[in-house]
Figure 1 (cartoon, rainbow over the protein chains, first blue to last red):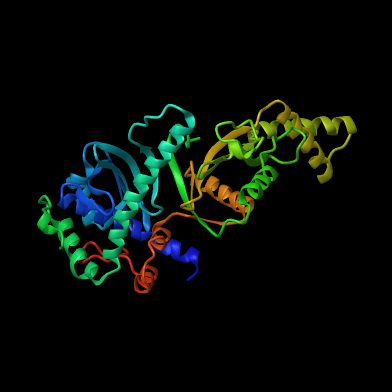
Figure 2: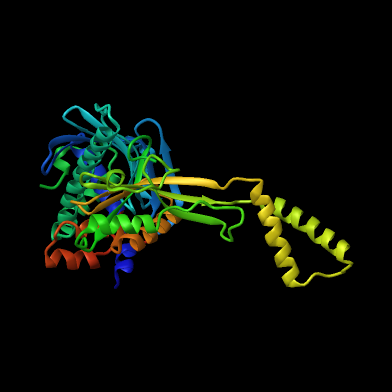
Length: 180
Length: 210
C-alpha cells in the first residue's frame, strides 16, 4: 500500500481513539495521567457526533447538555455508531482548552485557549503558539498511549471486551471497569 | 487569519525533508518569486494566489524581518477570485451577441466571434467589480517541522499544500491518525500492525462494517 492508501484506510483509528478516550474518561470521571503533563482532566463537552462506520449519512449530532452521558448516545453506540467528532474540554493546572476534535483527520477546530497575557503582537503570537503546542502535545501523548494499547494483543483480549460491556451497560462506568 | 488573532481552527501538516544550506536567503528569494500578484480586469486569469505578509494582506515586500519570527516562518496565503454571477454574465453575453449580430447583419456567430465577445464582456464586467479576497495565515515551526494553516477547507488546504511545496521544495503531509502514529518512532512490530490493523467491532453480535 502506498502512503495515500495507508492514510485513507487508517482513518478509522481516529474514531476508535475517541471511543477509547470516552470510555476512559467515563471510568475515571475524566481524570487521567498524561505522559509529560501529569494529572489533567478530559471532559466530553456539549457537542458529540456519532456516525455509522463507512456510512456518513447515518449520523447523530448531539448538542447541548452532556451528550456523552446521555441514553441517546449510548443507544446510538449500541446501533454500531462510533464517535466521529467531539467537543472536548481539557483542564491542566487550572488552565483550560476547549476545542472540537474531528476523528478521521485529527483536526482541531474552534479552539479556545487559556487567556493570553501578552500585549505586544509578536508576544501574543508566540504565546498562542506555545499554548497550541502544549495542547497538541497533550493530545498526541494520549493518542500515543491509545496506539500502544490498540496495537497490542491486550486490545482484543481486555480493552475491546470492556468497551463492548460499557456500551451495553446503563450504569455509570467505574474505575474497576477499565482494564489494568 | 488566525496566527496572531481570531479563530483557532487550523489544519496541521508535517514537513518532510531537510532544509537547504542558506535556507533563509534561499526561501526569501522563493517567497518573493511566488508572492501574490493582484488580478487586473485585463488579465486572462479568473484567480490569482500567492504569498503576502502576515497580518498585512495588501503587502508583499518580503524581508527576513517580516517572514522569520524566531523559530517560525509566517506568511499569509492570499487567493483572489473574480466571480461574476453566471446569470448576469449570461444576460450580458446574450445582449452583446444580439448587438453584434445587428451591427454586422449576421444571423449566426462563429465560435471565434463568440469567444472574442465573451472576453470583452468579461473584461467589462470585471472593471465594474472587485475580486473576492481570501487570506489565510500560515506558520511553519522550523524546529518541530510543523506547519499550521488556519483553514480546514479541503479545497483551500490542497491549493495551499501544492503552493507551499512549490515554494519550499519540501514535502508537506497533512496530519491524520496514521501520520500521527508515524511521529511516535514506533517499533517494527507496531508499525506493521499500524499498517494492517482492522477496524474493531464495538458491538458484539453486529458486523463491524454494519
